[in-house]
Length: 164
Image 1: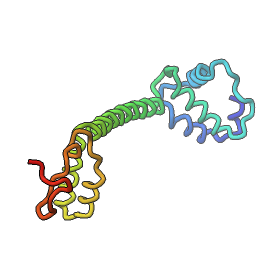
Image 2: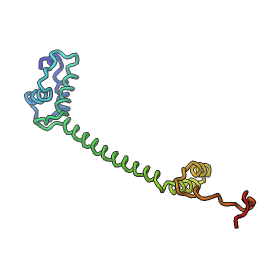
Image 3: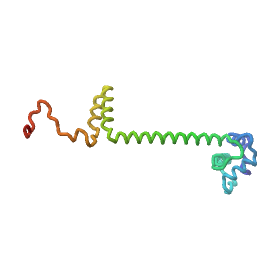
Image 4: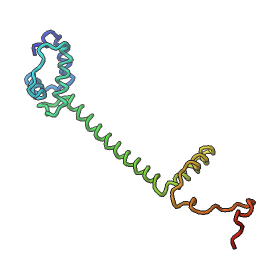
């Protein structure tokens, strides 16, 4: 790579050594870079030769092609990919649990959940929150709202009188 001639050799070695293992040769590096480029030509004179080398190695080691020798960067990439896959699976499980919880709350047991939340707030001594929860909890159909109003002691006789 002619464009690396002006760069100090220790910097090139450090750049390559941080990503590759001891089994790599110059020919293996060039072959891996060539495979990852898919026939596209390299730049003749990049502005930042070490940065360009880093991006070429990154593409060669994290792309779809398996490198010919073990590489530190490839192993780190595989570990990160596996961790991300596990994390995404866990997040999907959490999302499914949350959806099930929300479906349960929206279902026929919603009034029970609201009553329990109000009771927990009252137990903590937060009576304002308990009243708010109880007042804002929507009543599902088929609950006590379908029943006629019950007369309370001291409220007098009903408007139509007593039906005996």
